[in-house]
Structure formats: structure tokens, C-alpha cells
Length: 424
Image (cartoon, rainbow, N blue to C red):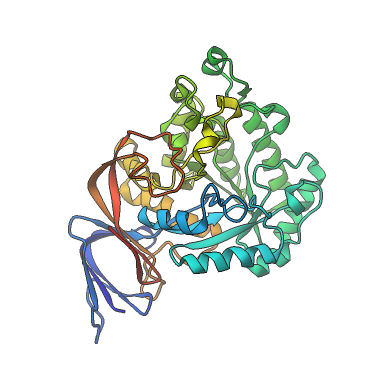
């Protein structure tokens, strides 16, 4: 159907558009910008006066809990929450049950997502079989089945030779390897950043070196193998410095950061708030400032949610025994937009870190609004204020550290391939 989005402020970093103009959609693609194409008939008109019109958000890290943990959330529930937050594409890591290490599991996920018919899902395949860190997976088969990259998620690969061989294998098939830097021998089942707060609360700690040593090791292997690598959910300022140097030296590396590491520190644990139990842990104010500086400098290329919904019981145990992870898919958009006010980032740069840059990292043909491109679009009301609560969160997981925070900015319409999948 023909859709006319009128009077909106169009923001498309890929084409350097940042102005008030109209957008026309026909046959699931962008038909024209500014002036309607010849013969265009609008079957639906969306008045976007006072609103931003931008490409649909691409979330580089979202755990949807299906298959395997449907008691926490499902593909249907979380993709509905995603489009309500302006997200049109979600990248699913392989640590599902069963693990994404065979084409059959990928097919299962795509079929269930097709039935949900809300957002698009892309998958990362397991780097090693069963994520056991011992035997390299059949990466070529996973790529042929639709995987956009490979990762071992947070499962360790202790044998450096196995990691090197996996990188060489991925490079051979032009696959991006997604790395979550963590030295498990230093983590020691910790649950909070090693510092004053963890000492005062008596919590098992995770030192900064657990991440930085892993980053150093992995960067050396990237240099050795030439694989294209993406570092996921950085949490320390020193890691940003190391990635910056690697990029300066010409290594093919990119990085992302989660919204909670841009707004929360270990101080927010308070008196054992289990909603602040996350891996990697919330770090110091200095680290948060370093991560924000990494965004401004372009060292960090994308912002993600690292969405991990849980059932209520998962957060009722003592802090270290509670399950790590936060429900953050609903707050990705407003928190990202807030960075344009609190940092030196411009609005167009923030939008690029939510759309264009993630698309390029995943190798997707989306994240931009060229004429003829698939019309994945988010219309955002930047003035709408709302308070985070169990009632306003669309995700089934209510384990948000931002409960009672006032947010500004909310999606009013979300379009996937020219079809309105959400309207507030």
C-alpha cells in the first residue's frame, strides 16, 4: 500500500538528510523523498508534525529467551516490545536452548519469528560446537542458513589455539566474529565491579583486568588472523583506549556499548538492587565517562540494548545468586536520544549509532532510507514524557534498573518493509 509520511523531520545519516520533508512508501520500499512520485496514491497518511522520521533501529544484542526459556519471554512478546520501541531488527546471540550451532535451530527461530510477524530477527551462529570452546562449528553451513556472524557468546574459549583457528576459519568465509571480552579466570563468578562498592557490600568482584586482558589477547589474534571483529558491550575506559589504538593501526575492529553502561555505575547497586546485576558489571563513573567519550570519538560504533528479560523469581535471590541481566529493550530509544543532550554527539550521530552503523556491522541492506530501499522506519515523538514502570514496559521482563525514571521520547509508528507494525 502507498503510505505518505508528511511534515516529519527526516533524519537519515547515510544520505546526510536532516531536515523537514515528506517520505513516500510504495510496494514495501521508499518510493520518494520530498515530492510524491508520478502516479502515487496514498492509502494511508501519517502526520509526523513535530516528530522525527528515521530508519528503524537495529539492536545488535537482544536475548529473546526463545527457544528454550519461554517462561521468561518469547519471540512474539519481545518483538512486539521491540517495535513499540522503534526497533525493526534484532540480532539474536547463539546461547539459546538448543544452541544455534546447526541450520535446523536457525530455521526454527526464523519460522517462529515469521509467525510473530513484528520485527526482523537475524542470528549469530555459535563459534564452537555447543559453545563448549573445544571444537570449531560448521561456520559455512551456519552462514548459508542465514547467520550474519559468529560468536561464542559469554562461554569461554580457554585454549588460545582454538580461538586462533576459529578466527582463521571465520576470516576464510568472510564472517564477522563477535567477541565478548572476558577472562573467566579473573571473573571467578563475581557479580560486581572490583572497587569500593563491592568491598563495602561484601560482594564477589570482577576486576577491570578481566575485560582489558581479554581485549588485549583478542586484538593480538585479530592482527594475526586478519578476521573482521566486533567487540560487544564494552564496560571500561581502558578497553575503549585499546580499541581506539587498534583502529588507528588499521585493524578491522568495531565496538558497541549497552545503554545501561552509559547511564549507570556501581554506585547504583545501592543496597543490593538485583536489577543492577549484569555481566559485564556496572563500572565506575570514570569508566562511564570513558565509554561516552568513545561514542563521541567514533571508537564505539553502535549502541545496543543487551536486552535480557527475566521472570520475577530470577531477581529475588541474594545479589550474587540472582540471574544477571536487565530488561532494556523498551528504554533503548529514549536513553539514546538523551545522549544528544548530555554529550557532544549530534542527533544525527546518535541515530547513526542506532541504525546505519549496526547495519554495516551486520552486513545488512537496511539502516538507511535511500529511494528503492526497504522501508524500515521509525517515527518518534521526541517530546512525549513517560515513566518507566511494570505497566509501561512492553517486554514481558520487568527487571529494569530504570524503574521510576522519567523518559522523554517514544515511537509513535514503526514500519517494517512498508507495513505498519506498531501505532501508538
